[in-house]
Length: 375
Ligand SMILES: *Cc1c(COP(=O)(O)O)cnc(C)c1O
Image (tube, rainbow, N blue to C red):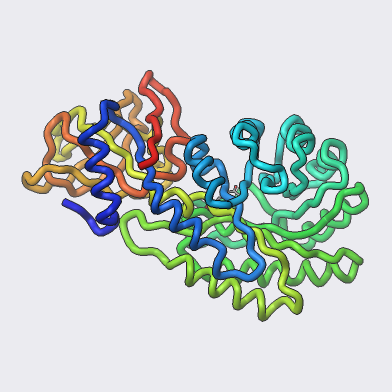
């Protein structure tokens, strides 16, 4: 019953954990070896690249500690995320904040801690930064195509090139230090050309800024690297090869690069261990209920992320509607899962569940937020 989406070594560790733990389901297992591999891979294909883990993907302190030990830096958006890094004594020069709209209190606290890199995409944000984080190194968020990304981020943030240039000039006027440009191609981006299109868009602003006396030096390419959920995706090495080539073609002096992967660092290292809690026939439909759902861990399924599921049963395969434990009718994880019929109490594993699962979870309806264990 081992699908090829999970490696043999991970599979053995998962089965061993399940066999020996006293912990009740649901819980999330993170395979340390996969995180190590990802940390070694990401950023290696691009010259002058520094990698910042987007903490929101999975802010569990032990996971963050592991990533810290592996030498990655961090991207944060709130006091809560900053607190985790403070607890681990992470030096402020390893932390940036790329959320374009931050609370004044967060900016103040981040600045006091020593963080100096901040994104922005509005005049109001420049005003805030100039008061609470004077002279900081700021970079403007550009709007870029998000086509082919499963979790688009382009509607909420980003500006067009003309506005980006005006904002950089305004930031300089306000005593900030405008150093660069950022963009996000959308999360779980399966369209490799989103990165090259974005860089093409950047290059014009870069030149126009230089004409106005602003010498930019930093390009933050955001996150978006995809992981395998149910099928293969473009390799990170391929994406970085393209980015590196485009950078070398377009820039006479290649800029310093910041990359902010979240999903790609922890996503495919995570396995949700859940239990079947019920089954029902409703008309033609077979419903399967498990103890983790949309509200306590699988929120992304309502945005279109489809997970691979595994059960231990060898019974006849059926098509199921997979649903969570709460009484809310939104709590449906997938309307088309083919699985052998399990019995109540059987484990059901959900693969590639390390990112944007626990960090989204609530205790709605009294169901607990699953604990995370590193294996
Ligand atoms: C969420 C986020 C990321 C991480 O994106 P992934 O798609 O998980 O890699 C990076 N940068 C910013 C600004 C973000 O908001």
